Structure formats: structure tokens, C-alpha cells
Image (cartoon, rainbow, N blue to C red; front, side, top):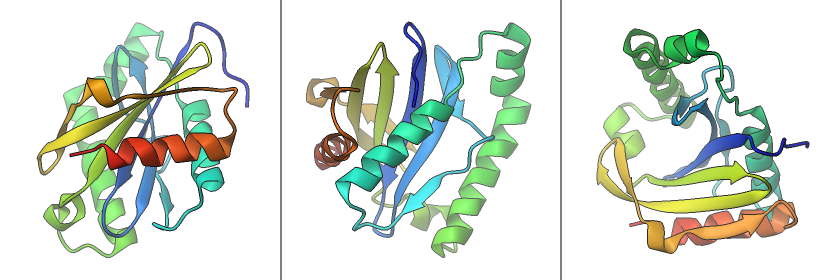
Length: 163
């Protein structure tokens, strides 16, 4: 995979009692779930190499929305909200949850940001059913020089730091 210098790439790694979920995010400054790329749903026992490779693919799919009209359309509430609701419904369906509350119960979230070959993997604190706050002091910093297996291990380390 080729990543451009001076470009930002984003993804989020979620985990609950049923699955690991890797989702591409796009935007510029403010980011959101990129509806063009469905979530990667992986079993809990996924090996580090597969997890690292999956995250690298999700990051490669991330789009920097430099075009203002495209960015406004992407983040506009009346467009974003239905896309988010569709994302939640698909996750519930794919994972067998009857309610969104069950899907998000005990869900952990790790933000992933790639810039100039540096991966910043940030664990979070679950503050509400569908909301998390960053825990900056516990970031895991890696680079594209790390193998997919090492990146997967770094993701699991960050996940272990979630609260």
C-alpha cells in the first residue's frame, strides 16, 4: 500500500464481546465514518498480522476531503445521520444484536491516525453508549516500518488501555 507524504489517513478500531470492527474514516480536520467502505468485521481471535493488514487497508481507503463542497456534503447532518444509522443497523444485523444498546455495551474504541509514516493509535474511555473520550497519555506510536503483525499487536495493546 502506498501512503502519500503530508496526507492524513484515519480509521477506528472497535471491539465488543462479539467481534473486532475496523472502520475507515474520512474528512479534513473533522472526520466521520466513510460510508463508501463497509466495516471489516473480524472474530475476536483474529491474529495480529491479519488485524494489522486490515487496519492498513482501512487507512489506505481513507479520503482527505480537500474539496469544500464534497466535505460539506459528507459531514452535513442530514446526510451523516442516516448513514450512521445505517452503519449501526448493519452492524447489529451482521453481529446478531437486537438493539443498538446491546451492540455498544462495553464497546471499546481506538482511534488510528497515520501521517508521514507515523501511526498514532489512541485508546479511549467509554463515556456514553455511543461516545468515547480520548486518553492521550496512553497512545501507542508505531510507523509504517513496523510489520502488520507488530501493528496488530500495537492495536491490541491500545485496546487493553481502553477504559
